[in-house]
Each structure stands twice: as structure tokens, then as C-alpha cells.
Length: 339
Image 1 (tube, rainbow, N blue to C red):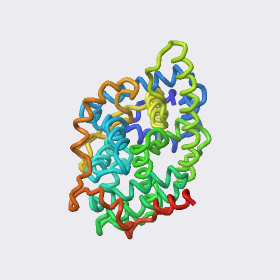
Image 2: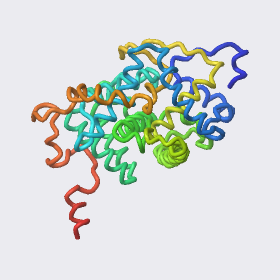
Image 3: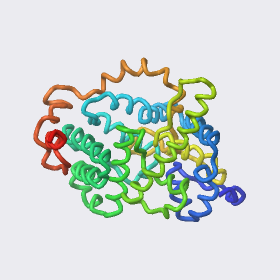
């Protein structure tokens, strides 16, 4: 809280670490101080989102570019990909982004994309999204859990078996995959959210994520109603509506502004070439629409190849992978709709 400034600054390596300490010390007091969710006007929300990029930029261009890749470039690529999924190269880059955000606080020396086959990553990310869009987040979690287990080296598998370790890791991976593939409806589930939104009781669970999905989508709808109303008054049709991930980005930015008692000191992690940083998104999406044409050329380089021995998309019409838990088959769904 603000009172902490007079008692000496507390060194932290990331906003995620700061949030964990705030939760452990006095969650209620921290929530009262971070009041954008409960008291913020539309202008407050817009300001918080617009300040996101500047709060991120203090950590350098390399970190800023990686964060922009996750929040802007990657969703644009996956939005036009059929079927929607992540390539292995993208999943590996996603791991780098986690480290820059300080989510794992340096305790997970692995990448969920390191050992898992490319085909398995594409299958898992595709079916995780399809299950989530049907409202079945449990199936999404089960798919990701099996992928995560497959990615562990034999010498580290004992760490995977720790219950909370598995839960936290899989929820982070699942929510990141969903946010990358559909940021309009999904967002990254991180510690900061517990400080920014009251009455969650700090329970990092699948049930909490389901509840948050509904709450954050409703907040985005409320903000969009105001945005549309203002656009009509200004006779302007050029605006980008709020997404679930935009709402969370604004909360992260607001939290940064409410932490004068903390001293951010990013440190380098040996397992990652990047630094731990606070949160933040690249410049707000509504401010960088002009970059679409520029991004299109670079998007092709990371598209999954159609070569059978590479990052193939041919799995889409093949039998489902034995490791994964899937919902209804697409052909069965078409048959049901036609009958």
C-alpha cells in the first residue's frame, strides 16, 4: 500500500513477485488501494491502457518488442490461421515472454515447448481453444496438462508431480494459449489479477479462472458500450473495441501506478536471455492499427510448414493424438447439426 513508501522500499524483480508479496501481506488493503475495477470511470480505464506501453518501455526495447509480439503480432497471425493453433516456434517464444513477465519467479527451468513434438503442440492448442469456446475449460486444462507433462525431462519429472506446481503451471500455460488465440474472450491468469479485482480470495484455480472470464468479459462489454456511445457523438467509426486481454492490461498498468512502496529491480535469469520485468503490454492495440500491413510480411515466416516432417498442419484430418483428451469430433458435430 501507499504507506509502505515511508518504511523503506521493498526490492522485487517483477510485478508478479510484488503481487504475490502483496497477497501474502495484506490482500484486502492492496485491493482497496488498487481501485480501478470498483471505482474507475471509462476515462480512468482508457488512461490505464494508454499508459501500458510507457510502463513497459522502461525495461528496454527487447522486452517491449517481445511483449508486443504476444499481445499484438501473435493474435493477428493466429486469427487468420485455419485451423487456429500455435506452432512450436511460437510456443517456445511464449516461454520467453513468461520469463520477462516474472510469472515463474525463476523456479521453473523448462519450456513447455522444449520436448513436446510439434504435432502435439498444434493439436493441444487447437483443441484447448475449441473446448474453451464451448465453455468446457476443464477439457482445455486436461489437454494442456498432458502436454506439459510430456515436455518434462526425466530428471525433473518429480517437480511436475507437485500438485500446486502442476496446477499453477498448467493454468498459466492454458490461459496464455487461449489469450494468444482469442484475446477477445480470454486473458492470461496471473497473480496481479487477485490484487486488482476484489472478492477472489486469492484462490488460483480453474474455477476462479472461469469466474473471472465472465467478470472480465462483462467489464469489456460495459467499456465498449461507452466507447460506442462516444464514437457516435463524435461521428467517428474508427475505434478498436475492448477485449478481455485489454481489460487485464489496463489493470496491470493501474497496479503499477499504485506501488510507490516497491522498488522494481529487474534481474537476469540464467535460463532466459531476457530480464524479469513488471507487467505490461506493448502500445495499446487501438493506437497501432497502422502496423497491420507491416506485420503481414513477417507473419509468413512463423507459419507452420506443410511439410510432413516439419510443423505440419496435416494432423487436422488425421486420428487424434493418443496423449490428448478431446471433445466431440468435428464430423460428429456436423452430423448432429444436419440431423
